[in-house]
Length: 326
Length: 189
Image 1 (cartoon, chains in turn green, blue):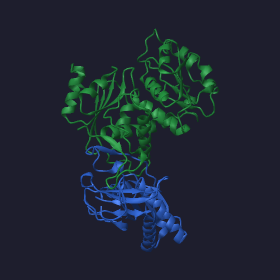
Image 2: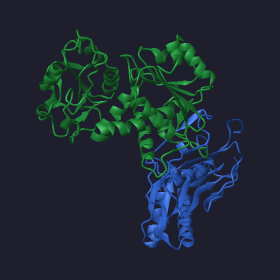
Image 3: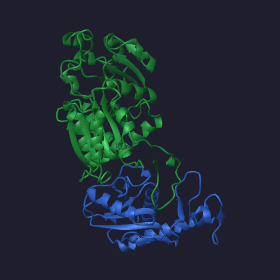
Image 4: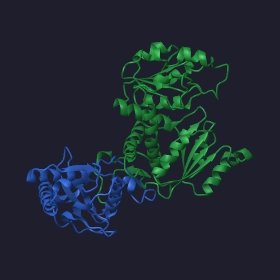
């Protein structure tokens, strides 16, 4: 259960032959080492290139079965995992909350055990409860990939953000990254913070004090409630979606007010350095957290994030799903 | 360990840097002889040592014929047929091949030919980039024990081995000289 640089024909003599991946699950970035994160990003480089081939499919996971188990609704993450699995030649079934027996009272564990009885090899789980992927990873032989659990972590989103920054700027260490919006309820923000801090970026969280509490400073980041003070020194701004469906009145000032104080308007975008990257995990609320013109502008790498998400997810499925657990 | 210089930390030396140089120069001559339309050739090395060997063959061809041969890399890790059955997962790398491959002669280059499974994976990978006119195969060492109906078109050295022996190739290291070594299993050493 380890990765070495190796062919069957000769002994590996290279320095990087050391053990670099031995996890069956990807649950979050908090537990990953710098070397493991970099290894996923390097592996994603190889898989990104598959998308440019005439035949965009490799047999790496042929014969494996992947279950997309989404207890919370999601289209883009599920589709991205599904396409990644197709490109690796795995077979895919999708189960959503409404279609599953969870609505009939079955427990998460029983549902998962049933999936395992069907010999699923990889379980991609989106769940509203933090820790649900960990719970299943401890109990199942199958690989468990966290596709977002509550307000805890969304590791593949953070990995694709890291990948995109590294691709566009050539490095991550030393860059100033501003994460703007609803930090408190955001698993994307948490995973990004863990990854960026580990890789040596300077992170500033920006948003209203109700959504960006001081406790976050313990994670090694700075906090600001004034976006105009942060934008001029940022190398990357990552705008989080205003999650209407999760907002409670007591935390959130109202859409118009949010835009006035924290939205990346055309005017505000002029404060940015010309080479500052504008990122957004999507789906974007045009006119709320970001102006339409800014989202479609030259500094925006929002669609690159989507493309890179596919490569990163192929890498994660290959690394976790390709390992034998016996 | 009867023949060759003994180096207890590595094994029995089979080829030194000069022997490798001569073998690759001969392979370059054979490629020139076999392929009258040299500009159509693409040398595709299997990472990492195959890429270095392909580069050196291209250097020899340039010196002999004054022609630049395109060289690239072909990743085989994601095309192997044994992912999930091996305890060790191969590292994947990006392939770099000129496209389109139509009308081209692709010569796959690797350090050691053993079971033939790596070459089979390389041919699958190449086919996902396009349909070359033909595929040939060059290996620095052919150690036998094929598990597939595959042979090399160009061989640097045929090396009879036992299945449990290992062949170590070092080429292009910045600090240490090139060489090929045969390593006996621990119990027999």
